[in-house]
Image (cartoon, rainbow, N blue to C red):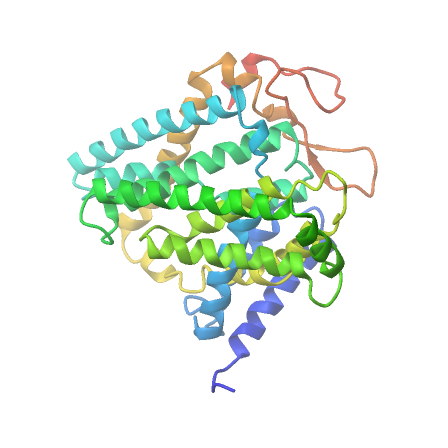
Length: 377
């Protein structure tokens, strides 16, 4: 066995276990478990207590955890529902946010605060889809219309930013044209693989074998899903693209070809979520901020001033398109007064109250949201 230490990984696993348990014991602490995991990751890292270093076991599991997180996020996307307003609104919001972000970047360059306004603009529109999806799943909203709207918005923003970064800030290819060509070939390859998997799934012989082996020690469906994930990640890397793009598309493809209308494998996704959310993904969340340099954040007065400035700019760039589109968005966003509403059952968790993209409130309430709610954000 290689001479590696698992002490750091043990501490990370303990934090991953303790964070949701602590929030479960004290339900009045209303923060997502992933936020607490990230904060605790900073605390146990070199900038805090110094208990953990970003060693080889943590690095490997963290990378795999990130890939699995985006893979499961892709599984939550219901492609058939991403049409009309559910797709148009996130696209409009992304374009407006990108324009505002570029304007902010140019203004900050003129003030001598940044070197690349394009990088600042792309950074301001990026969204961490990996943080959004777990929160929606815990709230039971991932499969609802509102959840799909949020996932669609996060997908457009996250991977729009990833594609722009690949095109303009990657050294893997000589120019933007070559990178666009590689991206197009990669998408076509993904589509071809998805069509091949769907065709193989329609084979009676293969389906019978998979059905026989799915709940044995072979766990053939889980192994096939992991193979698809790793293959798409490796393929994205070979094309010089971001590996998270391959992981996300692997989840989308699997969700499209594995609809299971006959309910022959109802526990398949539960098994995948057990691997991801029970093992790999918490390691990624905790370890993602182990290397965070907390001392550099407070190293100079100018840095301290710029931190809240960037936060305000980030909120403005993302919130302005929401309110500027007025009535279009008012029927598709959560009402601020009803965003968190506790159900009457004492044993239930806090749930999301929201207005569907078609204007009907999906949870019983004493009042309806109006377009004027948008002005209160």
